Length: 391
Length: 248
Image (cartoon, rainbow over all chains, first blue to last red; front, side, top):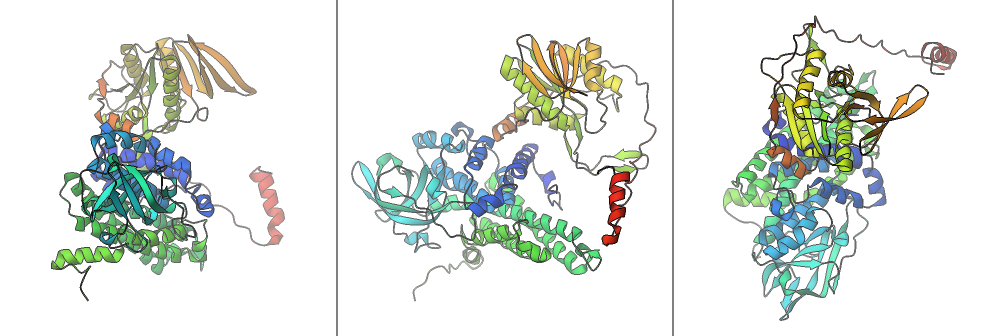
């Protein structure tokens, strides 16, 4: 079944030739290498190592970062299109690219010293070094400002102590960008996998993002050299800047999941005969397909407009919150509706539906939960923040 | 070091639904791609360069709409991209196409030409042999394997009773079948290079056309399938498979 992307409002005509070339490059790779193998990877609960290398060879890791660091210096719309195609394959695959590019490479490029950039970025762009991002802790998810992980200045080195949780790529990472409090101020630190006192056990038993490595990061008197602190940022601005980029990618990625579910549902509805006719000929099914098209199209327009604003530097974080929240929400609803159209067949791994649905449950929560994004927008509307209060 | 050329053609995507409007094919809304066999020719050209050095020039013929296939070739890593066209031209016949390409190949001092064994739209298989004829060069068609030597290439050509391993001295035109190599994919850096690359446009003197297309018609519709129900029909189905479909 040849994949035919839904593009009801001709989004393609709004993109540059090279953006479409990059999209098609990733689309072809996902069709050839990912979709035929993703179910096996999920059953085995592993992220195929060769996929990370392929992403590096294609040049999509940290692709918006400057060419002098071995990256491509491409537009955010191109990055979004890449996320869309990767997540059409699997959210775990897009997560790998998001973490590497937006959460590990971006803070080094934005807040690192020139030496740090030259040392880490080229090898991370090529996929030789895998990165991860440590912000969330077991007891501090939506409120990272209260994190416990601490750094202490020991004169010629820092000591890190604490734990991070829900860290994509953690166990396989060569480089971790870790946020910890130094004298009560949040700072970014680059931890390497062999640093003494650092370990990254894998978290198991997931029903979601099964083809993705999720880990804890544990720091027990973890000793790192002084030149591993990111010099140019203090406070939550650092991690939140990274999250804005990752959330932007998610807003595109969710369209990919939704497209996969819509495509499967459409093909199934056209071929499944009940009461002598394809179920696609019945009004209830057409209504569902129409709703899917409507939501995907709105999500595409939202993502494209946001992408152009991102490239122009005219965006605000609340716009990213809206796009992440809306597009993941619509993708999850489309996955559920697609499962309904597939009937009992929808639960089988012959179809991508349940996998996307289960993945999207994680995507709805990570990188700012659906509810937190609502509160961010609520604050923008009213001018009143509702996150903290004195009871 | 050889001057290597690869001929690439822009064709409708092989999955595109081709419609007839009036008495002409309507291609206004199809997606366009590089003809699939040309991807193998492009790969063979790149392999030739990697083995023997030289430069690879991708050449297409057509309007600026065809620049995309050249950019695709540039993203793969060719050195130059050339489009042959003159705004006074419209639909060209095979004789004109081959004459125009030969003009460009001579201007580029080409020593070896790779092309797909046929284009996915016309399926004529005429360009490779036609160019070779006009150049006075050797022509090998439908190759399914290639090895590079100092003064030529050794190619594998399918024959009715097996394959023929054939040595070819340069200059030559080599048309490529699929399957003997895996066409390389572009990467983001290649695409960014392609973005900045300039398409060189060459004109040519071409002969007057001696043919005109009178009309296009769609292929006949396939007959609908037959449906048999119940065990009693098994002999009928077996007979049909044996006698009509010739599959058992």
